[in-house]
Length: 356
Image (cartoon, rainbow, N blue to C red; front, side):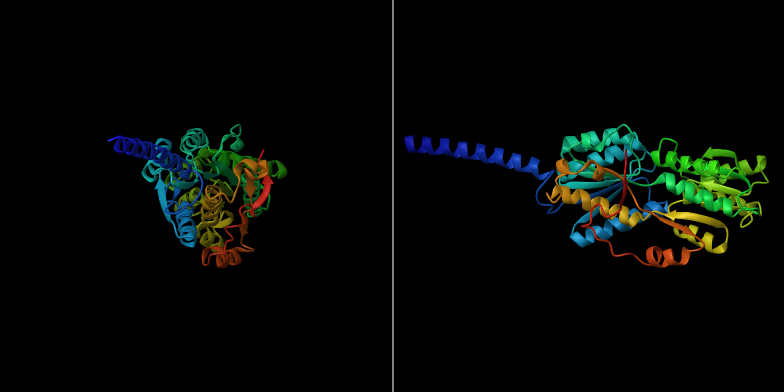
């Protein structure tokens, strides 16, 4: 009986110790170590926007390269839904996941970073982040990356002004993105910089169309009533530029009054080739999703030591491709009709400059 009691005591102690080890291992496994069976979370706004739809293409391309599964979560403009969907995937996988996230609004980064820090899940964001929120204050937020909105807004505006009937002299209207988005603010500032550099140009009206094509169409129709003699339309993204173009077509002004945008969606390339648009900036969404997931997964697998990363690699701007009539065919061949070979292990190869 004594031997049996001793045996039972030892068995209970062993099982208790094993349970602690298992629990510890599960907690650690949510943030580091093997990525076996990990889900690659992609939290974005929508798949109806051609640019954002390419996030899915890029994520699946990377997922295939590492033998994992990409899960695309769309919030359709709801910040609450995006945060809840992220939390749901974390719960479903027991934390065995990483994320690439394009936050619906900049302020959402606060809730997202808290949720993923608490869960011990590594993630990378693109585009939206409050300026005063620093990535290095989070243990699991590896990097925040953005294509440079200032240079994009300035380039497209400069190309628009060149397209005026009298180059660099005339009037135009502008369509802003979601006002709470930091990238929308930067692109608008870049456009304003171009206006300052071209005293013969005047911005006569502007409205926010929230990145939305239908809203841009309606806003442009209304703005044309008050400003029928404009020389161009500047838009903060291609989706809005294409909405504006539809309004110009209705008014018989397409080609006479050109549009510009940003993101490099297929229809915008067509518009440039037809002479209806002057420029766009190709932001490679396939690269964004792939490299974002790669960086997050590398942190999970211990290939990147987040705590020792220099600050310049935690918040930075990446290179984009300026597109005009001069190089549209070349960009089409390389990025749209084909897909470049991405080096997913060159985690910070797109670095252009640090983000303050």
